[in-house]
Amino acid sequence: MYKAKVVKLKVSPHPNADRLQLGNVWGIQVIVGLDTQDGDIGVFFPQDGQLSEEFLSYNNLYRHSEKNQDADKSGYFGDNGRVTAEKLRGEKSDGFWCPLSCFEYTGYNVSKLKPGDEFDELNGHKICKKYYTPATQNAMGKRAKRTQANYNLPRHYDTEQLKYNLHQIERGDYIIVTEKCHGTSTRIGNVKVERKQKLSWWQKLYNKLPLPKYPETVSQYEFVVGTRNTIASEWVNPDSSDYYRIELANPLDGLLKKGEVIYAEIVGFDNKGKPIMNPHSTNKLPDIKKQYGETMTYTYGCAWNDVNKPQRKMLVYRITQVNEDGFELDLTWLQIKKRCRELGLEYVPEIEGYHYTQTWADTLEKHTENLERLLRIMEKNELSHPSLLDNSHIREGLVLRLEKANGNIIALKHKSWEFGILEGYLKQDDTYIDTEEIA
Image 1 (cartoon, helix red, strand yellow):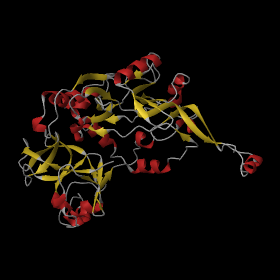
Image 2: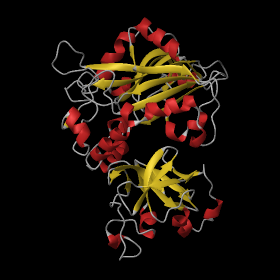
Image 3: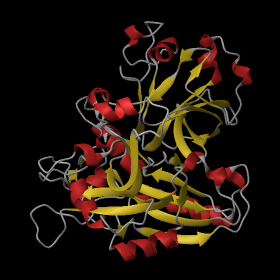
Image 4: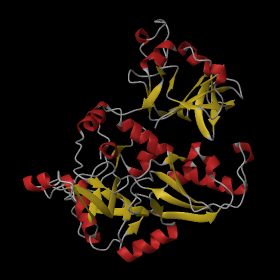
């Protein structure tokens, strides 16, 4: 869920602009004005959000001044209020920061806000939400409620942003860094399914007697294929462009243990030859354009009409064992790799794994040698490297898998700034549909 975050800002001079400064939020850079002081407490909006009309108008942030409270003042937000990643005078700005005074119009006592607080509304006033293009919103609204039974096939949890959760890294954690792959989610399991039985008229009549009843539901283990939000087994057919989901899953039918669920990204091309994920125009990033060309398609070693390469592939990132009550037990990364080898599956590319041996301090100024190594992996010179599976496109980002000493497992993601720019540029088209959000 998208939230505004209360933060304490570090400020430094902008090297190429006299009237701008560089702000630092947990290692994230954002451009701020000269009236911002080092140590100021304010509110940070990450990219990919949408600010409310009321908030933008009250604070005169619209580019079109007639939409602002003071019609003689203008800001730099478009009519849709999107928070984007930009580059201003040669420096990255990965979001939007504003002082607490911007929220006084809500009537909320802003002096109560402290670093670490998060919100999407104050005192009943809507402030922000996640941004979806109009076409994506329309497609999400039309998404059918296709489920016809009770499937014990848990959805994958929303992976939190690494940059806001560095405090979750603790002494003793085993950290596995993997490439985040740009694909569509799938979940495949041999799971318990409960279905309603159609009783005959005489069975219904019999059930009214004070005698043992004919069961109205029946439960059994079934091989089930799902998208992120739906049960694909119910609606995908051989004529569908989504049939690749079933084709990739079918070899596992009969091989999965009872209660075993596999979570993976599907990359490459669909059954009609269209890239599963929309290609990116690189025109906004000259350096990326020079290296990868005007259009970047996320193929991960797949190809259409090339017999020497697969048309699509499945990259596993999580495997769980689900009991009859719905409790999930995660396999460790070593167990995942072993199970993938047994099933003939490919897992997401592993970059490195190591034990975190230091304690985590509260501020970035005090981070230790291990954390510095972790942060270096996140830097541009790492993230903008080609995918480990295909040098024709960049990496989407990284995922840190934290395996705790108590057995808990936490996954945190970090998308590259370059990917954020390219995906944001794609979302400028109101007709763009986010494939993953509607799956």
